Length: 207
Image 1 (spheres, rainbow, N blue to C red):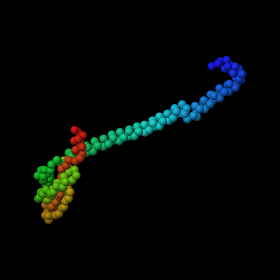
Image 2: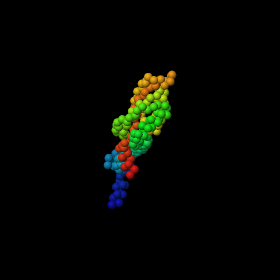
Image 3: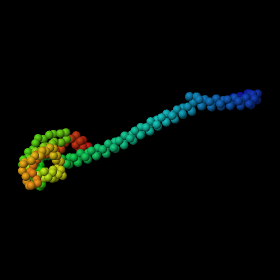
Image 4: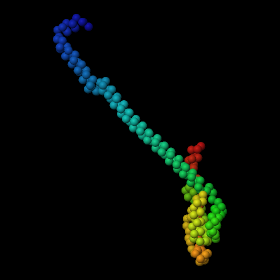
């Protein structure tokens, strides 16, 4: 560059005008920086907004994941509880129904309260979804209070036994001055556990 020409130009042009031109240049540059969509500022602002949007979405996904994990843990607790309940039920049900042993148990409990067993007969087996149901029909003779005591004893045996139906009638005899003899026909039901899908699931999990 010819510095002499530049020196002559600056000497001829007033300093205030040069200052104005310089300031105008700075102002235009600042305006472009603040308002031009292609400026570095706008590019950085756009990047920041994009990053904020990504962060917001990641935070939302993180909360969803945390809730999902929490729900999974709750389901695990629920499954463990149901599994334990299933094991408890299985423990209270016989794997096999021993008809002679069951009928002997009923007869023994009846004799303990003074009832006499006049007849006993096993009924049909009904197969349900998770268990099989075996019915028995018994006819007892005694007095009413003995029948109540007998049913109370049956309700406390370890095996699940249900008195599903009964009928009472007088025999017309008096066993004493106060107590007439009655004949009680009672249907009992006991149950056998049958393997379920839950057992298959537990077996697969344990392998």
